[in-house]
Structures are given as structure tokens and as C-alpha cells.
Image (cartoon, rainbow, N blue to C red; front, side, top):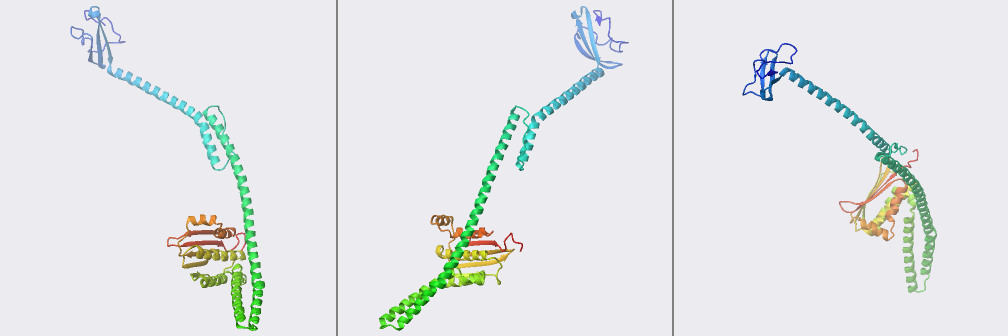
Length: 387
């Protein structure tokens, strides 16, 4: 501090004043109340000159070494940085704690949801609060209980449906067996009784024709005998179609060959037949089913398509009997199925039922080249058999 005569009257230094600062930056008419950079033996000093009562009383000079100021500033910055870091750490800890509180229930909910999606319906979410998360947990548990109840009902309905399907399959199987038995009985009666009766009638008419009194009676009896012979042939063909004895006596392949031969002769269609050289080993139910499918499919070709050629292939692959029937007609469309349903024609459905009941598959579709292809696959042996 200087008086109005620019004489030093006091200072705040603990020791001697730094050299070179007393006689510099003195108050004068031009440098009142200003800042100056001074050089001393302690380094650069920023010096501020401020008058007291416009210099009438004296002057005050305040200075600070740049190194000390920088040290103070750096210290303050360091403290500020440390304080900021501590505040951030504390804030992160608080955020983490709050996040854990909020997400713990949600994570538990996700874990339980994952377990339930994998089929463990016994899992439940702990209801630890009454906030939104707790309400969500209660709603989720209620939903799980409803899901269990629904699954129980579905399983019950499914079991009932399976039982009904089993009964249905058993009834259809018995119906088909009864149908085959009835066909066999009718075929036998037509072949044995009706054919014998017609044969006896033909013999009688022949005797009567030989004993006719005039040509008119002879011609009439001969004509009736020819009509009776024609009826006898048709009855025998019908008996064979109902249940061909060759199917029981010689097996499926000879039965198909004979049926195709008679079919070509009757309808004039070309049939390309590809069969195994040896008889395929199978039970009688599969043989009858395949024969009926061939019979029904060829009849459908005649009734519902304009085909001129039929290709039939029977092969044995990987312990499965594969049947393919293809024609070159106009193909089958969805409306054909609907029309068949409306007219109560069950031929296609009957073929499918025969295949499915025997553990096989049935497919019917139009082919790109034109026409329809029917494919059936049946296991050669019963899956429950040890053979």
C-alpha cells in the first residue's frame, strides 16, 4: 500500500519484497486503476493498481505470481474434476440401484415367460409390490392360470377327438371288411347259384328248341337262349368284379393283370402296366385295398375324363408299396371335388380312407403335362409287426 506521496506504507509479504516491483507500476496521472505484468526474481507477477479516494489517500497494489495463480487454478480444477467424478459415481450407483429395483421384477417376468414358452406352466411371477410391475405380474399369473385351464380343456377335447377318431377308424375298417365279406358272399352266390340256374335254363331252352314243333318256336327259344347266355356272362363278370377269385388264389399282381386285360377289352383304352416280376409280400387287407383303388381309379377315368391312355405302376421301395395311376385326360379341379361331394360320390374319399386306415398316404392331383395322377403308399408290413 502506498500513500499519496507514493511511499510504501505496508505490504503483506512475510519476508522481503520481490526485487523489481517497488519502483515499477507507480501511480501517475496516466496509469491509475490498471493492470500490469511485472517481472521479479520470483517470476512474472500480475499487478493491479487501484487508487483510494482517487489517490488523495493513497494507492493499493494487489499482485499474484502467475505460477501460483496457475497452481491455484489447477488445484481448483482438479478438485472440481474429482468432485464431478464422485458425483457421477454416486449418481451411477443410485441409477444402478433404482434400475435393479425396477428391472428385477421385469427380469423375473421375462424368465418365467421364457420357461412357460418352453412348456413349464408351473412357473409363477412373485408379486412383491402394488405398482405397475406388480399389477403386470398378477395379470401374467392370471393369464398363465387361464392358459393351463385352456390347455386342459384342449387336451380333454383332443383325447375325446382321438377316441372318436379311433372309433371311427374301427367302424370304417369293420365296414370295409363287412363290405368285402358281403361282396365275396354275393359273388359266390352269383357264380354258384345264379349261374347254375341260368345254365340249367339254357340247357332246358336248348332241349325245348330241339323239340320245337315249328321253326318259329325254334327261333324264339334259340333267341331266348342267347339272351340268357349274355346275361350269364354279365353275371359272371359282375361276380368277378365283386370279388375276383384270382385275388385270393394267386395274389394281387395276377388279379391286376387280369382286370386290366378285361378293362382294355371292354372300354378300348390303352393301359401301360408296370408291375414287379414277383408277387409282393403283403397281407390280404393291403392287397384288397390296392386292388380296389386300381379298380375305382380306372372306373373314374372312364366316367369323368376324356383320357385315351392310363399308366399303372406298382413298385416296392424301402419296405413301402407304391402305386401310381396316371391318365392323359383333362385333369381334376377343385370344383370336381365339390361336385362329387354334392352328388354323394365317395369314390375318392373311399380310396383315401382305405389307404389311411392301413397306415399309408393318398394323393390326387393334376399334372403339368395334362391329366391326373393318383399315388398311394402303403407300408409293406404292419408297423407293429416284428418282421
